[in-house]
Image (cartoon, rainbow, N blue to C red; front, top):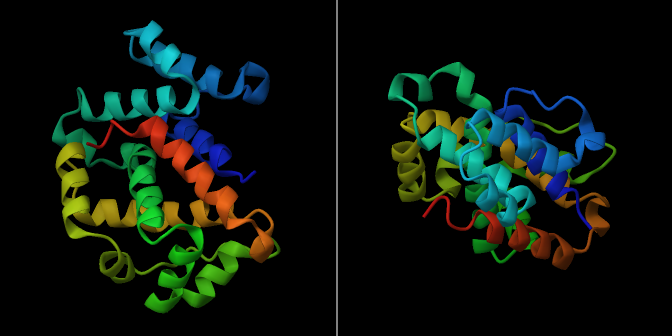
Length: 202
């Protein structure tokens, strides 16, 4: 089991402005889901709850961001944490496109990020966050970035910045045992999260 769901939960909490302070005792993802739904005035509560856990959380955050936001708000600093949630499925889908965790790690190393990757994978090391935007631009499909930029009305530069911030956290969460982490487990967890958020970025 990897820590991917923890990172998704954390990002979702940040996107809600950290309102869900009570932690696991408030029912973990269910508690966050309640916060998001409260923020949205309880619309479609039953649907979201049936959709369950992470999918509901991400759906609500994505819905509230791409729903009633004016472009000026969407590019403001206040929504940086929401952008992190938005690019999460993009990062996970990219890892899948590389053939899973191992392929993605190789691709990142070949892109000149070997030192950073080592710091993300090694549980003993602090994550090196310095991923130059040009590296991200060379790795990610420009059309995908363009699509997210249009949906969120945020500049492409902000999307690249969000990916650079999320990527280390995702790789870190997928490798809790460092180099001895089972890549198949990581790939299964990626698939699980993508299934839950599947419809949101279509």
